[in-house]
Length: 610
Image (cartoon, rainbow, N blue to C red; front, side, top):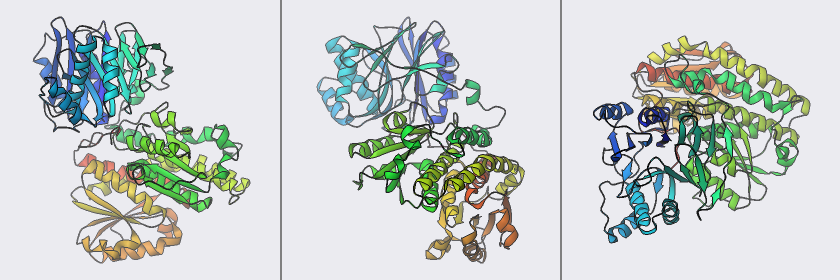
């Protein structure tokens, strides 16, 4: 949440900062601002609203310019969205931008009031800025001031600071919030995420916690908290800026849905060797996993829904009990963890604050931690004992699509590995299963994408809905939870996912004439039961859209107003084309409503605060 970019170099900084902030829009924001080092000192322009509003305001100040600047897109946490609460924030000696939450801001404010400070905004960030200012007044050293301030601050932060008397230099530090540092041919940078610097360089440093970066026009230096020079590892991005652009599609979300077949291939192909799951992790490729008696999958949002699919497939073919937990609940409920438990963390960004905290809790209890992450070198990836990367490529749209699909594919491979170790599946059966995954999943997802016209027509009849229900049984029920979330996220239609057998326990009282119900039927053993639920809602006037496997559609007469047939695939693998269809349905509803598909209101791509 929030986006930070800073630049120091010989170019005009304002276009670079604005362009960088635009690449970070996917993180979500309600206001934006920029501070520029000019010959007259640091000048700040900030405003509530989209970046276009900030650009219009900058046009009112054509004389503003300079080679060093920091920019920020804010997501309100302390104080309502407003010009005053927007970043950057200033004090007597400095200006800064901040991503995160300062938990003890009230205590800091009281201390600062005692020193004569007053506040213009409601934000925790202004308190942090003036705390550093107070310490700079005392020590006259930026690194010492930042170091001492961050020892006082409790909470999470990524900070970019410019001091009035040290022009063209940015100081940066982070804790529990991502920040990278980079050096390009035209200057040096700090940023919340890689896309912001890709146009300028593919090499970057992922700033370690407790390390202070000093970024000037021609070099970057790193210091520890005692002001000793230190080094950071230089990393290289293996994707380019074009991959983070729309590629001819109207929105990132639809582009990313269309990237699912290739993302699945890239995830699966290197993970199958000699026909069996291969993770290129020594412990996982041996019999290490056989020691675990139960698994806790911990995640948030869409990643947690992938965990529900993981639970279903692991329990089904490996017969190992799996518990799926929301990370924000897991970390506070004093979970019972045993030495032979495996804690599996799932996070697209690898920076999800609650998931990271849950990981640290599990490690503190001496439990083995394994992560499924998309972003290489992210916090969850670094701190887990082992990590499996999904290789989905950059995902820019706030609503996750291809990341969910590849997370599910890795969970399937993990299930096969566990099944072989648990002797619930022979190696020959495992080879056959993996071969079908490798060939059939990308092929049928591609076929699902070719159904976009039919899905778009179905979406047109849902656009006016205020409430909508998804129903299914078994693994279909788990898919419905993710489908419902997708629709809510981007169309603002209230939707709920229910097990079809739960309808008569209260939910059906909400079904009236014309209420849309999307019924998912891919699991043969419960299809007749699901059809009974469909008849129940149909008898109460529901408008039913059936999303059904080819085999079950041929076998059963499913009562519905519209039917979408899932391309042929083994029942156990139908998750992948089914979710693609459900994602497309949500996308087309939102697009037909004329909404901002990629940046829905009040949401952020990377939730780096609690």
